[in-house]
Image 1 (spheres, rainbow, N blue to C red):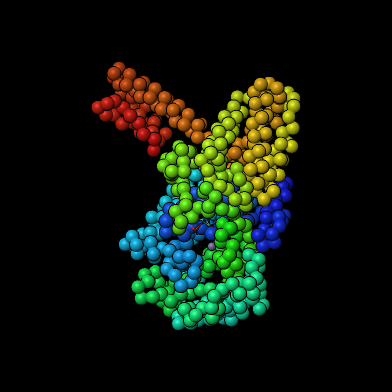
Image 2: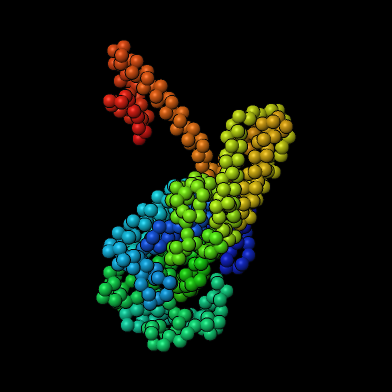
Length: 493
Ligand code: AMP
Ligand code: ZN
């Protein structure tokens, strides 16, 4: 029986403002779409935090036995500076400044994004589609919205008619914003824009002659509006009605509000059952942002090269620091806070290492089943990673008692305990026992050096069959010996 059948998971739904019991559309299957990065610069630690929140959510779904299709896109066109309709595309702007092809910018920062995520031990999503790879789908959606009467064309650009949409639907359903307030808070368009109303948003923009990123369409050579790509890619891979849509809190309005409007204008129904929003990472009290420069780059954490850091920290320490806060809480980055997280992380890892040395006895003096369920309850309560970590430290206390012989576990409970610690620490939270990796490298080096010594001895005894056998068997294991002037060295493939 899959684990999810025995657990009741609750998810905070931004749409209702409440924690709701999670029930997927198709039993045992989950479709989740998360807005990915706009690849015009390096991701900062704040972006990493949001993606990490969804990485842990994805990991927990997999742990519970759900077949999960996790789609996270790459925004490589359409995201306009300051999120307004009449500005410059973020990627085109970077390409202009750096005198690169826009696709060179996209390639450089997509590769960097992947490198960073793998350094921090993220699982890859199931599908990672790009906006430029889905222009045809986006044009189809614009046609559909126009056919249904919710969009209009002016001078080769197409806009979504928010006022008309709001007569039959609720624009503001997600963000809680009220259209009358929005209208009274916006200036007149002063003839500066083709839009009928300031709230209308671009579905398709006609490209100016100098604009490089352009595609043919029924209306003009141009490019899609930012919100459109996520509607196109989420529904293409997950269907018109899917389980979860996530992103950072700052995407709730206008991006996600507009996505709902686009979907409803196309299909007549709401696209997503559970909207999830991750809170911001701040640095010294202010939001980390690419545009303001108030940020720490993930690589700077690993080298310590940032004025806000007193030293370097490992990826798992950074991960542990981030996961000590619930994804919906604000988290402020300070050097002291990550130093404290480092202590906690190594205390946890030391205990996890110590667990291997504990032996079973005939009786259990600790109720491991209840503790294990407490760990599940933490994650079932809207993925409460800080409560889970508190439970894992309760596990550390048990390990210390067991080591002192002040507590005992029978073999079945000890097995349950080891498996649960392993699952939650490594599989669900995605932490790595870096010391163990380091130790294993030292051990491997010792063993290979011992074999090199034996091979040298065989050679000096003219036992070439033996020396070749050692070399060839190491090759089979992916270890290559290299004879040089300074002696024999090795590399692991
Ligand atoms: P962007 O590349 O700007 O589209 O952002 C990628 C993701 O990072 C989005 O989900 C944003 O909401 C999120 N994000 C941006 N800034 C922060 C921050 N300071 N803390 C947490 N998440 C952020
Ligand atoms: Zn999006």
